[in-house]
Image (tube, rainbow, N blue to C red; front, side, top):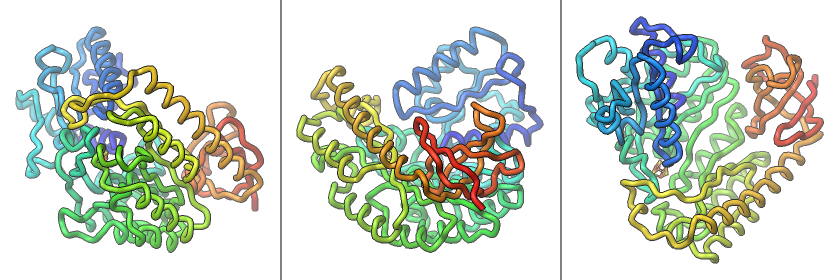
Length: 421
Ligand code: SF4
């Protein structure tokens, strides 16, 4: 989400006549687009901001969720010259060039919400010129008990489908071959505005001529309906990798997390994916050590990981976020035990991820080439339609194109392929 927001801010700054500096040292304005999802992310951002402040005279702008949450404090402590929350950041260029004197732009009023599907943004050449992040919703109203997002990003706002689809067409005309539809919970698209439902938007996006791949992030199991799977099955250019955060294998902990689904509901989605999409991948997010998680609850998470055999998982030890309901809940275990639980889980999942990657060896895959690999000038990196990282022989002309390969080996967690006819 922050990559998508950074993209829009960069566009807004360029539109206001600013140019990209070669680095922090030569910049007149340094923008920190921050994340608040974990305390660690904020701590790291703060260290970077402090360091920039101590180095030079540049104007320091802090944007994103940390600006929304702690902006006034950052101004008072002298770390930032301007703070701009996620509602306002797409018009950062306008704010800077207005010279209006205000130092905090933190309103969460819907009327202040700047258009996020700026048509002109389509033609910009980004770090990955063939790939565009396309934000379809802003905010979230699910209020998972550990999550700060609804408080810093505000209520769900779905952007009009017509504008999104027009934007996608313009992205493709500007050279994009791959897009990622973005939202905190894309499955709730249109529920606030009465626009078309997510599966229709996904189908229409995938039907844009010239688009080689469509990804979407993130799905909430509570709203992940069968018709989404049907749309994926009907469109060969939709990624076969579904990110479906489980968070815990225990219904009791899921209820404490306010996730609004049970393990069996999650299992029924996985079963439907298996029936409908013979070749697909599922990635997930898992939290261990949530307040009140017992050894039995933790075992249920391990069992769920063995049962669902995720291709990939983002695993975290619970970290309390001030301002969320779970901040007030008593943590049942100490940090050491929490980290032990996390390590066991990581070991289990790593072994499964490796087995799943090994099963791809000798298979035909289609890869969208992203750019040169770090290790060799003759090798390029990309991702398969199951979102597995892969390396293949390719050249600059292949970037953004689909290349057919046979997977020959697995090294670390990267597949290596040879081009096939
Ligand atoms: S769905 Fe839950 S975890 Fe995801 S952004 Fe919304 S509140 Fe946070």
